[in-house]
Image (cartoon, rainbow, N blue to C red; front, side):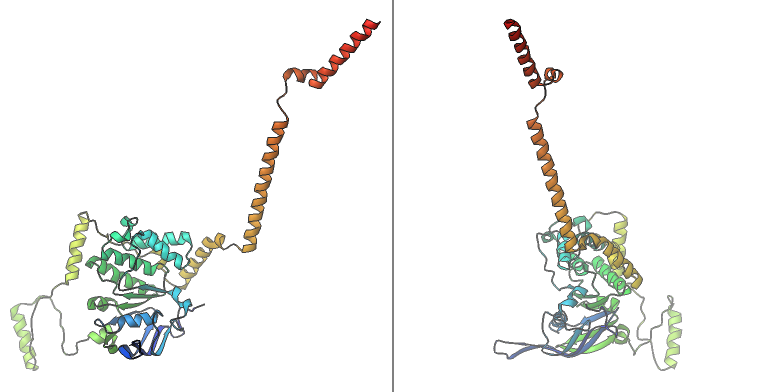
Length: 397
């Protein structure tokens, strides 16, 4: 059995991790990952940034056990990534969602739930909750092949969560999503972190990483160029920001005079602007309030219930409920065999009783009322013989 967390609260640890791709003659063709060290702690969102070809996807594939490192050490849940036992605790959303075009969203989630051996009633419940969460309940019975890329990414995110993973690995999760879906994904990641989930996020969209990540590394050429928390990396030590209500030009001139006495000046004066994302979300909310129709994905609902786990006590209660639901399905083999034998015996006895009843009906035809009153056909024949005998005796006499 795999422990969900190691003793130090570290889920993924890489030391000197290296991956070199070689050609047919074993000559070095590309050094995709070059001697990198990083640690992903439990209950955090870890960001991995870098341009195309910087080694992000290669690192993720090594964590998943899809590629073997050329050098260094890599541990996931304290075990080698190739250990099959760790897979049940990992959810993965690849950069491109590879789904079966002719399956519906419900069938897709049910299929992935079967891979994790989740009981059928639980699979159905989780699938419905996840589709509600990602805003695809209205199209739950349409083939996936008819969906846009953004809607496909929503299904891919639901698929990555079907097994309630402890470690969630997302490679470009907001690729193809509109600003509404992007905001929803970021809010979901923050909520999952508050529930104790650990998330590895790889993205080209720096704003997404900035909004949700606790720690991050920046890769280029297969090497880590910078690392640290968001505050550490984004701190501007060359400027001081003073925020105040709108000032008149006279007040600004007075402030500038004070600064000049200190040997510095005002570099620029400008009015603050809201973020484009905030403006977009405000417009969408107003349109939704006006009940304007849309054929695309709807706004997602609350986080799926099975993902909302607050702590060990809730986990224990959920486990007890699951065991109670699964109790009829985990019946022992001897008990099941005895029950089947008893049922077969009862069916055989019922068939024999029915056959005997039919045979009895065929051998006993309906009696004639006149025969019943005279004692039956044999009684009538005997009476006739006796009557004949008496006549014959009388004639002799």
